Length: 506
Length: 125
Image 1 (cartoon, each protein chain N blue to C red):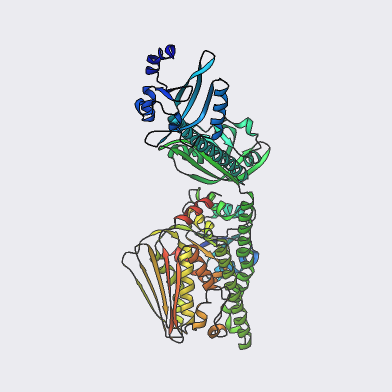
Image 2: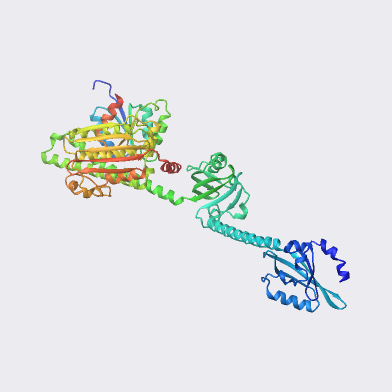
């Protein structure tokens, strides 16, 4: 003991908490570090068994192993010991037991503890942190795989580039469209690797390419351009170029290339059909109508019967012409709003044109026509002839279904955001049961089916166009008293507008 | 018809329609010349300087609008009144024609011959 106690001054300053027991496991010393850690004063534990530090949380096998080691006179180290402070709180320690032999027998046991509570806490936090990182990493990997899968599964070509137009990434579809291999393209400039042309084959200068808009003005550019590839016919591409903006600065762009060969072919087929229908069908009809007109100029040479026949042929020809016109309008309407002209127009001027066109029919039926309008109906960008067709169909219906000497009125007004067209008549009216169906294709109400000519297409076309323009049509009618149609058309047509712009680039 | 007889040039490739138009304009007191293609039409126009041209759009080889553009490049041709008389009432064509400069755009099947004559008289005062 004596030489051990000589070291007590050393233990005193040892930062590791230390307890020394005698061979009978009575505490003979604890150092200040342990006092601090455990909360016990040496005086409180002197002579006691160290099991006063036991928390009951240490696995029993640790003590069994410790016991075996100490009996065998060996040192023992454990990391799993959990002890209890005076105040009952727990702390985890690494501890080393060293038997000190005197005269060949273990005389003292020194337990040097190392408080690892903080370390354990840090380790636990570290483990949690690592788990979180792992999860994040996994989800990032998933995201990456997803992103990559997404990129690859997109049916369009996608190229990501830096702010100078150097290619950073591209997908398989891009390889197909451009005939590239990804590994050869990374780092190359989109400006030098391919050229774009307009429909006439004129090369689009660098500054006019959609990517330039994205990179220089931070706006999304799009349009249809033709890819010029060596030895390959030009491919129509719908290109969307979106800037990638970080902290308000354009750092690059992502381009999407959609091969629109098919759409272009379809559009061409639509145009061809309209061309065929309008020109080819109307030409013989014009010839017949004009021939009868010429014949009728010498009316006195015909018998009453012959004149009747001529009139019949003329009327039927006019009917055919009307049907052809309806067919064209239906087709245009079903092809979409893009078939209509988009321009600055004033609804009052459109109405004036229309009233001039209808004035003979109004006069023939001795109809009192009343036109009123709001004071501030302005010129705005819209589908002028779509508005013409809407008004034409509603007004000519009103004239048609109103008896001789009746009244027809047109009122044009506006709200802050909408143009309001109202056509009223004192005509035959629409039966209640038919009101919901009058906008259907070829539907004709029973009260007019036999008495009036018609194809049942006019209101279908009208409501279709209104729909395309984002507007609404409503009807109020009383059988035998008259009908009022109200059309509301929003002034703002941005969405349709941009589609229009796209189509114009074809 | 106390005034000088007005000369009009009809450019129309459909013979039936051309004959009907020519007959009507002749009967209405106009001096009529005709052409069945844009190439023949512009040659005739630049040579005979008609008072007005009735022009179809769909013509063999050169179409009506191409002819109109060429006509408008000529010193005389820039001012001659032109009325488009076509069965094609495609909006793009109409606005294109209006941009180049035409007096009106008539759809054949939607007008009577008498209305075409009336329109021509209106232009020629």
